[in-house]
View 1 (cartoon, helix red, strand yellow):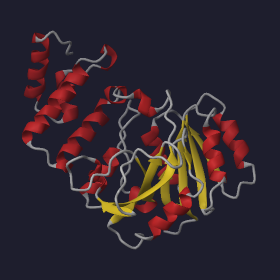
View 2 (cartoon, one colour; view 1 turned 180 degrees about the vertical axis):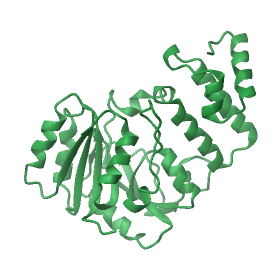
View 3 (cartoon, one colour; view 1 turned 45 degrees about the horizontal axis):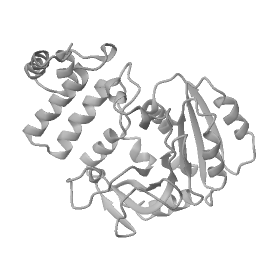
View 4 (spheres, one colour; view 1 turned 120 degrees about the vertical axis):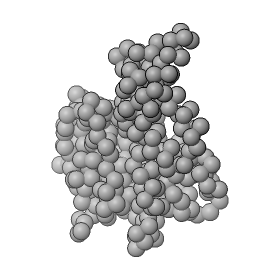
Length: 304
């Protein structure tokens, strides 16, 4: 496929007009110009549309495209972004963070080092709390070639801890879209990474900061475990596939089933699951989830 740009920077956003300008300004400062910026407005009720359209009419040196859709969550937005992308590389950049001035130059340079190797899904840099400080553990080398499962302790001798800034080959990412469930708006990106790992794909992780995080009270990270409680099918899918990818022994799988049931049977009534639904979503035998429900009743819990 012919691409129009080296990189598509894709930003799904919801009611972030008050802070989106920091990312916009960082894009204007980029030392690398062969990119487009797509902003997908996930049903915002603030001034996001007017703001982004005004930027699109400004001479920036890179194209800006804006699309607004009904609120459906970040994963649906990313799936749509993959349809719209005209860049060889696909870089999902959160609306409340910003890029270092040479982030896209570094990402493109590292991607070129593996572009001819079909074993690679993409590259990943560090996320920083500032442009010079990162919570990511140093790699001990300029880069490491690893499975996406290296994020999990114990998978291999090389553990790639913390959140990293993934830049994927668009053609590869299009093969690994996010599953979508009616009524659910969140699915951890780990589902896609784990599926890439399952098929033997690797990532070149480089030890350079390209993304600066600013965690907000209205962000996904701050929502914590409620994201999983409110999206039980996606939660169950992630756990099932992670257990398979990591080769968990039967005892650990049972512990995972039990924890899932406890979480989803004892949450607030609006999101509480029955034993049958737990069995369906987590892949456990119905007899097992019934037993968990009975045990919780004996202990004074509140299963459905």
